[in-house]
Length: 410
Ligand SMILES: Cc1ncc(C[n+]2csc(CCOP(=O)(O)OP(=O)(O)O)c2C)c(N)n1
Ligand SMILES: [Mg+2]
Image 1 (tube, helix red, strand yellow):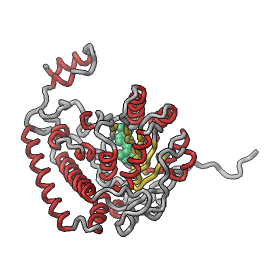
Image 2 (cartoon, rainbow, N blue to C red):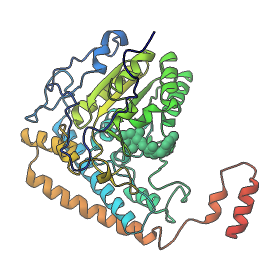
Image 3 (cartoon, rainbow, N blue to C red):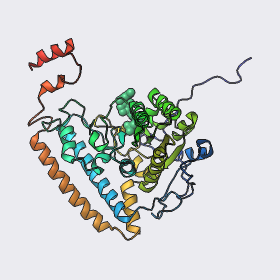
Image 4 (cartoon, protein in one colour):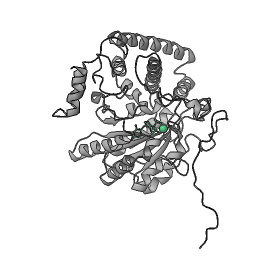
């Protein structure tokens, strides 16, 4: 048999490149409130549609509508809004600190603040989050002292990890934040294993794995999901689909023909797809999955549709591969702006209050930064003892360690 056409390879491309108009026509956005909210005990087979839809609570007029509205008190929403403001200021200052030579590396989660916050409020600090680098808001929401986070970023003498980890690869298990693994998607196998252990011991804690759109292409993601399904591990697998994996558009990781949420369906897991820039919808989805896990019904996969508002990291220049105004044109807006408008529409917040709070928060973060810099930065001040580099690595020192120790003279 002869081929009817010449074979050619399909290589997905980004919808818009530098100099072109942003193009998000590939994104289908249903009306807020239009997606059904099944009972947490619903079998995955009976809710497959939710993996292809988009749960939204905040409508275009910034009102909360529909069955996923978590009906949180305005007081709680104000707290969330303030925490997101602090998170954004903190991350902005740390990014700029890298430009000033005070740290070697930094990554911002601009535009993804609501996702971290949704988990901070729907899952407790006794549960364990296996994060990537864009959920620093989780720590801020849980009361981790910001100065400790800054000390870690600066690798100064106050860094509780003694400078052995890359900046922002925090370890704060006391805040339900497991030592961050820089190897993408390992979060999934680790969180699933942790959740399996919790269930095996008859405990009551659940785990969360964070993974990016790009990292879902890793084997760990698929193997982890399979284990989670087979053993009904009490775990939430949260995918932040921020449209980019460094310079690779989400289509390259498999977002063109199907959704990232639908990856869960193949292994028999329930899957939700949610507007990740809508705090209310994101919170409701995590809350749903947490309740399911706590009811011993097993794991849930959630895709948060969002946009990476800043560069991938301090080593990246996004103007080389996407339109400069892409983020401004993102149809799901900005999570802080949307929650602010919602509270304002309720008469529970105002532009003036917001501006005053932003100024106060900026001052507080600036003062903490000065304190951290007083201890030291990458370039100046007090640093951890280099001897610590060689501790807690191998039980018996490795020959390379001995050699490196000699070289350092410690
Ligand atoms: C296993 C592995 N492969 C490659 C990298 C290098 N790397 C770091 S971040 C990144 C992009 C990840 O994109 P995504 O999963 O979409 O997360 P995002 O950065 O968008 O939050 C890559 C390739 C890594 N850290 N680990
Ligand atoms: Mg990504």
